[in-house]
Amino acid sequence: MNISSEQFIGILRYVSLAIIRGRGMYFIASLITLVILGRVTLEVTPGLSESAQAWGRAGVSNLGSILIFIMLFSVSSVGPRMFSPGAAGFFVGKPLSRARLLTYLIITLNIVVALVMIASFAPFLAAEQWLGAQTAAWDDVLLQILLEFAIFVVYSPLLVWLSIRLGSGSLAVMGCFVVWLGAWLVAVREPFLGLIDNQVVVLTLNALYFILPKSREISELGLAGHWNFLPLLTSMAFAIAVWGIAVWRFREREF
Amino acid sequence: MTVAVTVEGVTKVYSRGLRRRRVTALNNVSLSVNAGEVFGLLGPNGAGKTTLVKAALGLVKVDAGHITLGGETPSNPLSRLRVGYLAEDHRFPRALTPLELLTLSARLSGKPERSIRARREELLRQVVMWDQADIRIARLSKGMAQRIGIAQAIIHDPEIIFLDEPTDGVDPLGRTLIRQLIIELRNQGKTVIVNSHLLAEFELFCDRVAILDHGVVLTVGRVTDLTRSEREYDVSGTFTTITDNLPAEIGRIISRTDTGLVVEIHSEPQVDILTDWLRQRNAHIHSLTPRTRTLESVYIQLLRASEGPATGREPE
Figure (tube, each protein chain N blue to C red):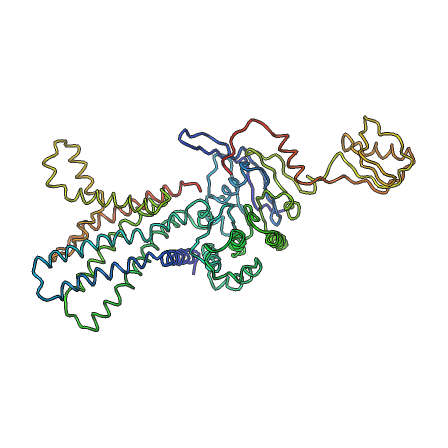
């Protein structure tokens, strides 16, 4: 095994321990359980009206949005802990380029969250196999959780950059929430565009739509058999751009 | 002699605060550290010692000059492949245990876990932390964390080791352990660069020291040379015949007994004149040795001599 692999495994192990011992994974697992149980309960409860089912699905979907922020919050403290004054020397003083260090951190955060999600979902998947596929709820929930993870992947470089820059995981999550809210507002801009006189503002809002991550469109992916991967691809482009800026800024930083 | 670290004309200026006030942390610093020696960086708070170490490790970028570590510049991450570092105000990952920290440190330096298992235990035993090997760092005292810090700095068997205030917060027993460890590292041929305020310790294990103040190197030299007085001598022998005073143009006798004199002369070449003067008076000289000063007195003397306009002491 070469030096890079050892360094990657070292950071992966550290990030895993930091998240597991920070108890963030229990929040993620609890919320995934809640989403699955909520969705399955809706499916298997007899006599539920269409409107009650629609309300229930909206509730479960909102739990999914909360899950994204729980995931972000659970891992938000890792970056500031690694690069706070006093701690940075341990990591930055090693034979590892800063670009690689930051990239490894972002990748390992995603891997650990993915593993936590798989571990949380696995018992339910096993239960489904054991019980027999009695309902389509499993597939819907699996897709929903996968899409929420995709949104987490998109936001993770922004979270890491903000958390290191601001030195606070909470502020970084708030920063991500502001971008998420902005992206949501831009996504539902159509009805309001007619009310805006200023062409510059209209153009800016339209441009922002193509720049900001499209959480809303990603979470609706596959809904009613509608598969449009363009929002996912442009959101990934946003993530890559943020990663590039983060690496550039991180290389210039002094500790 | 192989040079392990070279610092040539290094200048570092920090901009601080909203007004971007400029503070010179290092001002045209040049020095070199030979392979296999223990080199001490001395100076008051804000002298620039920590900045110099951070610049060597690539943690801060210099504005002018250049540094090499084993021939490589700090901008090349591989220059740190054979380097160990203990930061002054370290905060190791609190979620890890000492065993996990040592493993992480080795892995980040490219060493697999299986290759350091034996050394990990040996080092933890050496710094008397084996019993706490599975306790999270968050629960360890400052002194214990310091000892773990030294172990993590050398777990991957580096050639050059930077220790910034290694005995800070450590009890006397721990200090002795750290001192022994540093001496052992020197015996193994490692280069050790130490920052410390505890001057008495420098005398015990440093081969050479550099004294810095306001980002300027005041002096670099061997501890024995720096502490040797050029003007005061201990003369032993029989001096019952010496009743008069030393002529003022040679110097003065500070204290006298029948078997010993403490003499201050104006300059080193006057030693010959002094011995002639004593022999003319039938004194029997057994030995004449320069008096040694403490490193602390040398340090204070140099700092007093260099006192100039204050430039701020924030960057350390």
